[in-house]
Length: 393
Image (cartoon, rainbow, N blue to C red; front, top):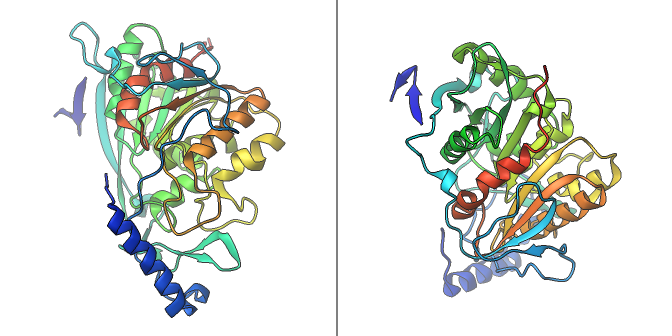
């Protein structure tokens, strides 16, 4: 693909000793400093290393029944339901550039927090996290978050096949730029397996989890991020690059990994008049919303706990993946709502019960937002995601 900027070409590992030491330090602090658990004014503790997630068996009782595929295979793009893919994750051929395939142009611009009415900017102090509310373990108290400026990049892929002046379908991605997405689109568009879409890859406003700008943007259960994209990002994309973006929600998709994945579903859930297609890797469908909201007290865990089961089916098609070594209890909260594998399994269960169009992939030998798994599955995921799309006259 051709890259332009300003219009011109252009694991952590934890040892058993460290785990034992961390556990001893936590127990010792509880006995010697009991007031810390009660205080809401002291600085949050320093986040410690955590043990590696356990490897999960997709046949665990309570997990969804899934079709196990031969190692190296991915599900058919027109198949619904649950699938298990094997431990070998070779990159799909569509992930490589080919000389005979038209390559899209990639542009980039920046956005400053001072220009945003939606996100003027926050940050959590380095080395701090938060403290569970002693009266409610599902609520995290963060005292070290404060106003802070940020600059974000917005990367825009325009396919060679785009006809200026026409309303194009598009996909909005989190944590950009996503070069894997752009590579896949070059080949899939050329093969007419997906429409000639524009891709808008938006970087986050920095940080991670509760108290950070990224956490505020991606983990908040509301329509705010979708509104930010609609009112502050998309108009700039259209004006800067002479493109027209469709208003048809059938021609609009969202995607992301981890909290960017839960954000992708949040965008479509709260604004189904804007988005009907969602693609997620290791979706953070867990309790990570901050500030705490009594209307959605369990954050994105509420999707499979209450929201989807108790809400009339929405016109959303979803592709999602989780790895067998995905995240598990990654912070100080012990609310039984911080298991990424279980959360995605329960998502598959409730989506099936409500008869959503969805495809769920459980990947063996895969970690959190596993790059090799994404390189293997992304072309098929995109093709599944755009099933049934027809451009309006």
